[in-house]
Image 1: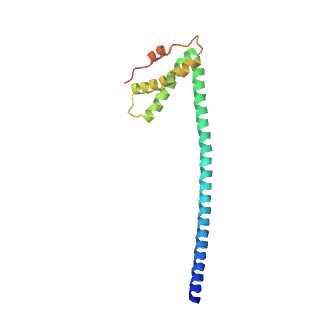
Image 2: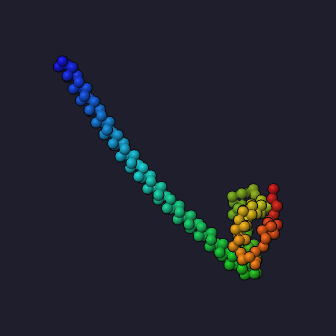
Image 3: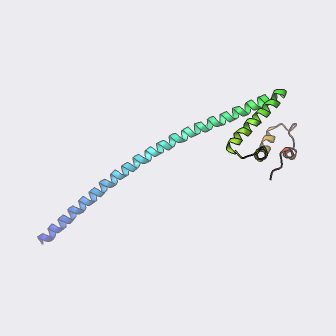
Length: 144
């Protein structure tokens, strides 16, 4: 009887110790994971803010370039030279990404991109000067 009581007390003591140490280890693990998640979330938020700033800056630069191009193109003689200059710069930028590319391939890629946005651009023009989309599509080169 005393041996049985002693055995039960030892077992219950061991069980309490095991459960307490497991609880303590789980608590430490949860705190570490929480700290890791908080750190990663903070880094992700900072990266998202930085990315948004970079994206906004890139968009603003692109809009500024487009605005300058439109302003220069509005001047008749200087506009022709500016158009040639800007197109050559765009081709050279494209050529960096496509070293084996030709001017015909560049023209086809520009034509494809232009065809995608042509309707939006034409809708922004006043109706009195707006050409028909079919007429504008005829100006674009035929690509395979």
